[in-house]
Amino acid sequence: MLFHEQPTDPWTPLDFMLIEAMEILEEETCSECGNPIWICRNENANNVGFKIKTAVCYARYEFDKWQEAQEKKKDQKKKYGQFPYIEAYTYDDSDMPSRMQFYKDMQNDVVE
Image (cartoon, rainbow, N blue to C red):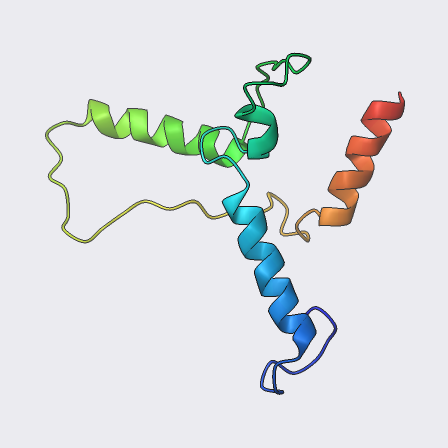
């Protein structure tokens, strides 16, 4: 996929290296804070501090509102096997924002 090759082709050494790199990245990422473990768990890093920041996930915002409304309807019986999930849509049926545009907007915010 990465190099537009068919995934049914025999695995190359690069395929194995990419899997190993992904496993290392996952193992070295703190499950609590998402930072590299050599930063957040380093007892000897006296020059490292941490700031608490917040961000808004608008999908989670809508989910939290929905969940709060559901809690007010305590008498509503839960349907077995049913679970809520979040689906994104555009108000005007236009295309979803692109990943590239998101990062360009972030870059413009930093420059300004």
